[in-house]
Length: 593
Image (cartoon, rainbow, N blue to C red; front, top):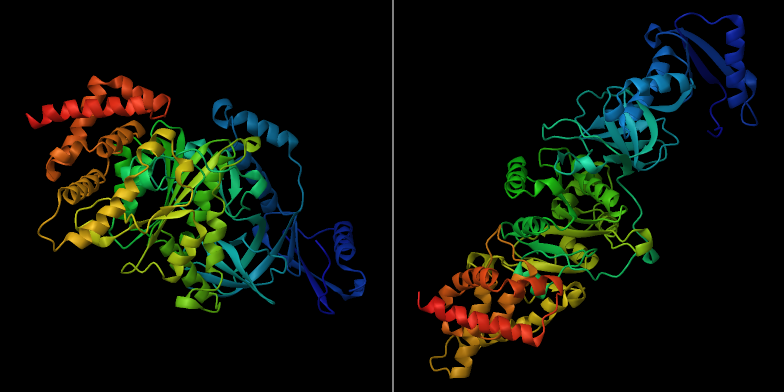
C-alpha cells in the first residue's frame, strides 16, 4: 500500500481487550511510524489513541485513516474459517472427508495481520450506496458492508465511490462501515452447475442443495483476440427447418432473435436447446427480467424433454434488484467460458437484452449519469458489445471450444430502427426477425425471410444441407412477389399456378410445432421432396401431414438413406434421385389411404 498525504494530525486508534504492555505498545507504534511517516509526515504528527473494545475477542486492531490492521482474535478466526471453507470447496473434499483438511490446515496455518481498507456509507437508497474513504477501490470490485450485504463498485468519483447492491438496502445505514475485498466480481464455476437453476451470483435457487464449485471466474473478462479465434465452420443445428436451411447458425456465431412480444422468440431458443441433446453441447439459458412463473415453466419443459441435464439456467427475474439483472448475462458468460476453455462447445441464450438495457439505464440514472438517446446512457453500446464479443470459436491451440450466443431483443410495434435493436444488430453476425402478422396468420415460427439474415451463411451448413437448401430462398422470394401481383387476377396460366402452389407448399413445410425438432437428414429429405415438386399433387392442407408420415416411412423403409446423410453429410445426385423415388412411391400410398 503506497503512502498518501493526509492532514497535519494523523490519528491512529489502537483497539484492545487487554491493555498492551509497554513493550508491545512501543512495537505497535514503531510499526505505524515506519509505515506512515516520511517526506509527507513527521512522526510527531501521528497521534495514538487507545480504545478498549471487548468485541474483538483478544489481540489488537489498529485503525489508521481508512486502513485497518487486524491482529485480533476475531480476525484470526476469520482467516482460519476462510481458509478451511476455501479448501473444503476444492476437489476431493467430499471423497476424503473434512478431517484431513482440518489437520493439514492447522499444521500449515500461519497468522498474518489482516490489512484492509475501510470506508463509510455517506448515503444509500434505490439499490445504490455512496461510500467515502475507499481511496484505492477499483471499478468492478466487490465490497462488503457491515451488515454482511455485498455490493460492486460501479462509479468512481473524486471523493467517493458508488456501489450497486446485490440485495435489499434495508440493513444498510448512513455511517455503516464498508470493507474492500480486493476481489473483482465473479461467479463460482464447475461441472455440477449443469442441471441446476442459479441466481446471478451463482447461488442455487432450485432447492436441490449446494453446488460443489471447481473454480471462480470474474464476470467481466477480456474477449478472445483475433489470433485466438478460428473462423466459424461447424453447424449448430437448431432443428428448425426455416432457420437451418436459410439462416444457418455455426458454433461460435452470434445470431440475434428479434421481434415483438409474444411472437415465439423464446420458443426458437428453447427448440435449439432441445435439439442439442446427445451432441455434447452445454446450454446456458439466462433469464433477465422475466416473470418467475415463465422461468419455472421453461425449466419444467427442459425437465420434461430430458434437456436439463446439460443445461444451466441463470435467473434474474423481474422481482430481482436491477444490479442482479445487470450482471446476470455476464455471470452466464463466465460459466460458458469455463466450459469453452476446456475445449467444449457452449450455447448461451440471453432472454432478453432489451430488459438488460433497461436495468442498466435505471442504474445509470440513479448514478446520475447523463441520459442520451431514449434516456439510455452513452455507453449502452459498450454494455452489449463487450458481452457478445466474448462469444467465439477458439483456435485449436486453445482447445477449439466455442460459445454460440443467441441474444433476444424485443421490439415495439416492429420498430427495428430503435436504439437498442440497431445496436445489437450491428454487433451480431445476423438476425432472425419474427413478424407478428406472420405469427397471427398461423405461420410459426414466424420468420420473415426478407429481413432475416446469417452473415456466416453456407459456411455453417453441411454439404448436404447446402445443396438441398440452395434454391429455397429464391423460390420463396418469387412466390411472395407473384402472390402480390396475382391476388386480384382471375385467369392464371398453368406455370403461374404451379409456382404459386409450390410457394404455398414451402410455407406449409416451414411450419413447425414447438418440441418437434428435425434432424439434418430429415430436413434434407424434406427439401429434396419439395424441390422435386412431389407435393404438387397434394392439397395444401395435407402437406404437413404428408411430410411427417413421409419421414416416418423413410426411417422405417429406407434407413440406409438417413444413415448415409447422417454420416457422409453429402447429397449426391444419385441419393437425391433415391429420395425422390421413395417420396413418389409413398405419395401414391398416401393418396390411396
